[in-house]
Length: 201
Image 1 (cartoon, rainbow, N blue to C red):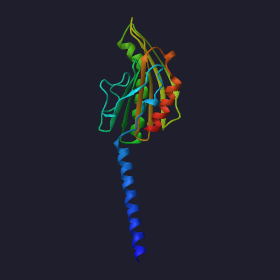
Image 2: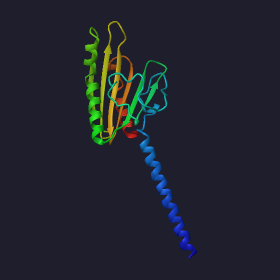
Image 3: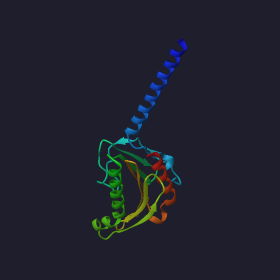
């Protein structure tokens, strides 16, 4: 009889621990999208990456090309990255209301990035700009990489790489940027960053 009670007690305890673990997992998932770490970004030749904290809401200012697209909801977070030089990066992640909402947001982000060079030129006559579609990455439910180059008259060239990733109801957009042109952008390394962003999402 005593053994029966012990087994029953252990079963009850195991069930309670399982419930607590499930609750903790749910709480972690509800906290927001997972974010990249410094080592996930394309390596810089002469500087380490410095990683900021994951913060609630949108960064200020919002990243070039995608400003005004991601809703600043209670489930929106961001993280900023920097180096000792001009190279920097940012990531915004948001948990939307549904897979359908996430698909719509990802499509809107992709459209904005694809049209960014042309939009920027219209606002900056006399400048030059170009872009490239580096295609999809097999990661998450969808992942796409783009590059955008801008050059104001008599000023430095700037290049950005963008990754738009969706997994379930979560969407993240990653921007890597520095002075330079598309020819110097670390596209292959950034595609690996995109894969890691999807895995962490």
